[in-house]
Image (cartoon, rainbow, N blue to C red):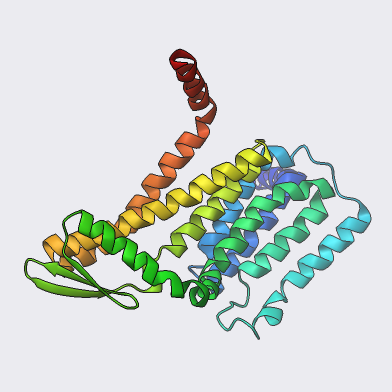
Length: 294
């Protein structure tokens, strides 16, 4: 009995800690999200992990004032009803989903920390909102960018011809490979463009650059370089799939199509962020080489 009382005392002492209570309350809604949308909880969980990473920063923040706490509690209570505001516009929205979670965490920040702590809330909440909205953004972009697909088809065909592959194109987005086993007609659709990987990269880029103390100019330059690099990787992905189709047939090409995007994207992420983390060292080496040459 004494052991049970001691454990309860330890638990109560732990819960009295403002930071521990904040994280406990942040985690509980993930159970509701998992119940209503199993796959949707993954994105919310990533947001929670980003919150955990910021624990040391949050422990230095002051407690919120009374008026701010009341506002935060109001938002927390309102977060459970976000579903009813969204369901007329988004049929697939879950009863307690990611939008509710974003409002809930925002309210928790107002309850537990002073207003300046909202800076720490940006990246976790941005991740959940942006990742949840990526498919919607893709559908919104589709009618605006689809007219430009024929230009991409022409570029892909030109690269394939340079590599010695026989290609015919048919307006607007058909590519016929003149394979050794006969012609193979393929259609270049919206999903082939690589918008999803570009959006995912952009989300990760915003999160990383927001946490960096670099100048705005440097952030913009790295953002442009990162997006252009992602587009270039997407072209490599498409060319690789067509080469697999040409040399090994549609069945092998289909298998390559399934995994090549993930592989190239992960490799590109690793390369880009490695270079980004070593940017000062790289710049110093470039400067030293310039001095030696000139």
